[in-house]
Amino acid sequence: MADIQKIVAVRIQATSLDATVVPSFEPQAPRFGNVIAEASGGVSPNEIRTVLWQDGLVQDVESDTVAGLNLDVIENADAANVAKFQGQVALRIAPGGAVPGDVAGGTSREFAGLVIGVYKRTPIEAVAGTGEDYVLILTPATGAVIEDLADSFAVLKNQSV
Amino acid sequence: MAFVVGDRTRPRLSSTAPLLSSFRLNPQPPVFAVVTRIIAGGEGPDDIIGTVAENGITWANNASTVQPAGVDENSLDLITAPDATTRDAFVDKFVVGLQPDGETEYAAEYRGVVVDVYIVNGVASVLVKTATGLYYELPVTRIAVVGFR
Image (cartoon, rainbow over all chains, first blue to last red; front, top):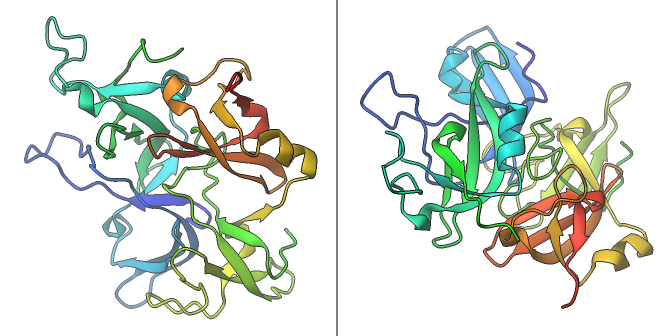
């Protein structure tokens, strides 16, 4: 267990009816928090994690199972993804792959944005380091914040000076 | 960590996940609090009672869950004032972040104004706000002033 001091975020819920599709694409900024206390066993709910969220709220997240807490641990992303995205402007490419003749991969340019963060989300009940890499994007055109799998994004090469 | 009443602080998000900041996630916008009381923690770390400036949440008695014991100081970052030299080097400047090599600039969209200069757990840092509303924080060694402005 020993979840104290881990950085967590609420798990992204299913975005597809296909059970084989990894949930992704959260169209808002995630709220990050720091686990400051934990308790297990006893009467239901058996699992309690006290989280200090980034905006100062302290909240007990409760469930009968660790998986039911619906929390992901935020961990290091692969170094290659960090080097690829840090300080860059990125665009989400079409989940089905690049569209022939369209350098944007089929995604409108309005979805291009600044990379706020690159990290790995690993379910709190899973083995550390086994999660997927995500990028967090702020799109200047609309102010929208997008979080999705890192391998769904490409870096725009013509943005740097 | 030697907090004292009146210190600035914030929830520690120092996952080692390498992000724009090399050591911290970047909430939008950042949220800071003021330490209002310290409860001695015996042999362990002290517990801190703080109030968040922006939303008024007090860790001692917020509406969600009463936390009479406060928050372990190891869950908080200590924010202190920089020395005059560091502050003067960045205040009122237009800047851009640098890659870990300390030379390669971030993309032009990351250029922005310095909105705060402070020391985070001993590391002199700059908080930048871009024209698009993005906040990001980097150590001063990862910030370059944009000249000819």
